[in-house]
Each structure stands twice: as C-alpha cells, then as structure tokens.
Length: 315
Image (cartoon, rainbow, N blue to C red; front, side, top):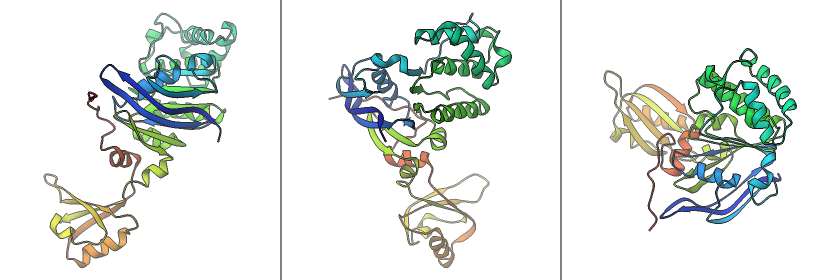
C-alpha cells in the first residue's frame, strides 16, 4: 500500500526534555490509523510536527508527497484537541468560514455545510448560534468544519474526548465514512476501545518512543489469554497448574475469591481448567477471556493508557 504519511527517525526536544524520540512509522493511503498512548506520551507533539506547526529536532517527515504539512495544508483536515468555534456564528457560517480558509468558495461551503449537517442529524441546529449547541453537537460541527473541503488526509487529536456514548458512536460512523470515501485518517486517542473498533493499523507510543506498529490483531496477539476462575482458590494452589504464566488473586468484600491466570502462548484454557479440577481447586465459575487492545498496551508499554506519563528529564 502506498504511504500517505512517512516518519523516519523523527525526534522533538524541548530544552532538556525529549518529547518524541527516534519515531518511525507509515500510514497507508485510504486507511484508518490509530495513534495511541497515554496523555503526555508525545502524540500531540508528533501531530504538530506532521502538520508543520512546529519543526522536528531531527528526522524526516513526508505527508502526501510533501516534506512539510504546510505545503499541502489545503489537502489536509485537522481537528485539534483544543476545540474552538466562534460562538456567535451559526453552524453553517462556521463551517463555511473554515472551508474558505482551505480555499473552498463560501457559497459552496454553505451548501456543503447544510448537506453535512442534515446527514449528521443537525439540520434543526443550522440557524442556532454555536453557543446554544450542546458539547456533542458543537464537536460534530467542528469535525464537519475540518473536512468540508474534502481533504485527502484527516488528522484528529483526541476526537472522542468529552463525548457521551451516543455521540461517540456517531463520530465513529463519520470516521468510517471518511475512509470509505478514500480519505486517510490518523487519529490520536488514549481510549483503546475506539481504536480496536476502527483501525486498520495502530501505532503505540509510550514516553515518546514507538512501542508497537501493526494491526489490532497483531497487537492483541502480544498479550496472553486469561482464564478467570471463581471460588475458594489460593495463589499457591494455582501455581501448580501447567501452562500458567502468571497468577493474580483478586479478593472482593462479600464476594468469592477470583483467580486470574495468564496462559502461556499456545496453552489451552481447557487443559488449565482440567488441571484445576484435578488439582482439587474449589472452582465455582470460570471464563476464558481473549486479550483486548487495552491488555496489549499495558503489556507492550507497562503503562495504563488512561493515565498520564510523568515527563522525564533528558540527561
């Protein structure tokens, strides 16, 4: 697949802090790529370098064949993490205004704005002021404003932040629609569930370094499957089970003890469960759980994706 974006050995240093370190990855044309990591991992710094809003300290960036995002800015759509639309404008006016900044004639921008607002169920909000819209509605308007000029490459920085589940589903549908129309989508997030549902490929970032690049299935394959047992079980008893890579006992007040067993690669849950019964463990319930992208992230980076990373000072 032809690359729409290439980063080769890119680093960004702020005085004595390395925000991004020797980062390399590619995003294929027409694909959806998740740029994942905890808050403070270097995602926003990387996106700003891709867009040409700040220079890289070292390394090479190529987007849509250009060495600087500013050279192809009319072919790029960008939704920043920090939202902002003029509060006294109507959605149609705001969308047409941002389209004009990318070279779209105002009349055409207003026509497209009305069509896209109707498609997203915001037809009744066309004549309201932005300040009168809910957060979810305003976020949809801003996304429409970022793609009204029909960009080839769309960059979304934490697009799901602050949205309720219904609006999150609507935004996911919009992202799928962009890719279906041929656009390339790169979106940053620290919420693994969205990436798991949407992405053709993911890049995991931790403390400014790439921890993984590949498909969602490839990422999940790096994490073990788990066998959850419920009953009067001890870690010592479970440690004798074959195929056990790690054991975690979870005790809850007023509830039976639960044992979480990480199965070694190739180990079957049936064999481990059989061994548990033969070993005399008091098992009252069990479930075999496949790894999630969240599990893979923790295993690959050692970080919780929903927790901030403490910045390190370069030595």
